Image (cartoon, rainbow, N blue to C red):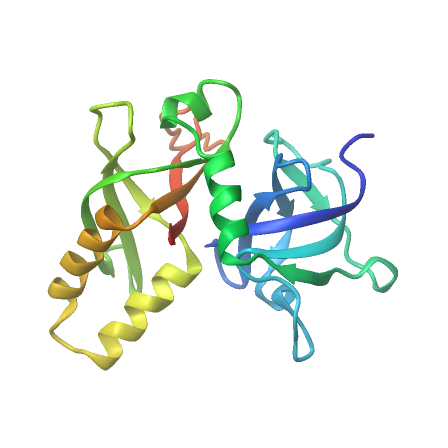
Length: 225
């Protein structure tokens, strides 16, 4: 099938799931969105060697997803020594700009109304939030209020970007009492620099269905050039 075999995968976002599970999303050599699964934090490295990094191009083996309720971009990550993934290169600044500008969608609706569950938008950011998770005080919840470039609708979505969480968790630990100023500064930076959000839909939730066919929207990656 067309989705099988060795693929050159450019990673654009690493998202938190649960325990050691992560979600990685990016594009293949034909700029088609891809979500390899299942993935774990241990898959990011092989020994001391980094296998995946943001804007890194990794050669890996993928197969058609055979699990329940597949999303169009879901692919099965083949995990064995004969087909082990390897980092080929990391995109330079010019290549990054060219790729993002080629991928960007005009709006959230342009992505999700056409059957896709992954995409890239340029936001107008209204607010950036980071706080203790009210349902799990041992962890944090990140959210962002934004508009896309076409709609006046304000979206208030969870940010699950693993690196985004680490930035703020490290800041809180090293700079107690200064989070409010950091959040304001971050919002201003997002609106003054060339910024993008990698957005995606969760799997279908039957008990608590989301607004997009039962799926919930999330910000999987925050990119500032």
